[in-house]
Length: 381
Image (tube, rainbow, N blue to C red; front, side):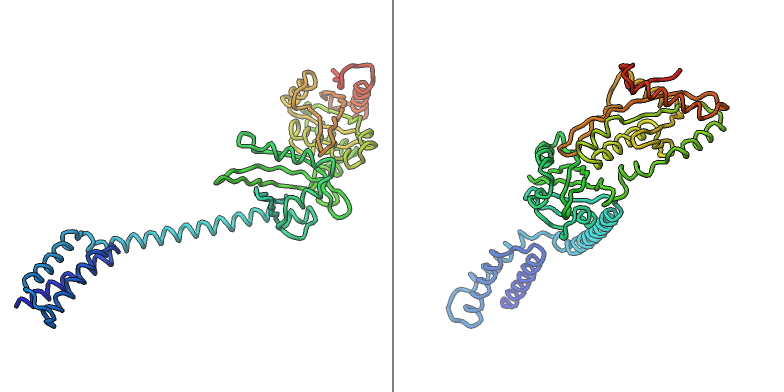
């Protein structure tokens, strides 16, 4: 009868240890204690190798079982379901995370494909990765290249300014923008780059967008807009359409007088770049659309302002200066200023011949250009 009790206790003890082992994964001491008690009981009682009082072995078995039972947590019996449910929930969350990541990855790739500009990632170990559009702009064959190789293609006059702009990046001023000449094949093209630095885990990465401002390489640029501007006859038709509406408007003629000197000094590409930048700045600040600006001659243009508030802003900028009419241009190592002259007239007589109207505008512009005035503008009225 005692033998059967011991066997039942040992079986219960083994089952207890098995549950703890599966659930808690740590029962080393108790397992050794169970193994020692079992072996001792088999050696002494079953095969009778040693003659020892069986009561000692029985108490050893009972004591070990009670020891294990004392440290047993009943919640382990219920943990299987809760752990399974938690695992199922974890798998579901993980699946959602992976699905969200994959969706984000596809959207990121799709967004890059839609970008008109090239995107490049520059890590702090000196390696760079550019999108397909970027490497087409610069003429490289591989998407991955070193920063040293990239900088070798920057014009010697522009490399110092380029490196200085990157070295100034920090958390308080993480954004930069610059233009520079880049050697693509056997010739230099102009690139405009705008980027930001990000900080993570003790490292930095510069992410930038680059576009070409060479009209032969990349047509959608400021220079291309300059070359596509409507000319004189379209200007007349536009004014006629405004006259039929009988709503007052301002005709602003302006000439970029020092552009020919810039062409002689740096080449026509620099002159076109400066004019393109200047025209876009005026368009953004005063008319907002390309239909209200016209190219009359190589360096003479016209702008029609229909908003009285916009004209007031232009007038204040002409009289008092400020950032709106800050025409200093920087392209790589080239630092020059555009010197515009303005002839301005408010149109209120809609039946008057346009030739006479525009004649007064041209006269006002000639006065602004002449040495008879110390201002760079003349307003009729």
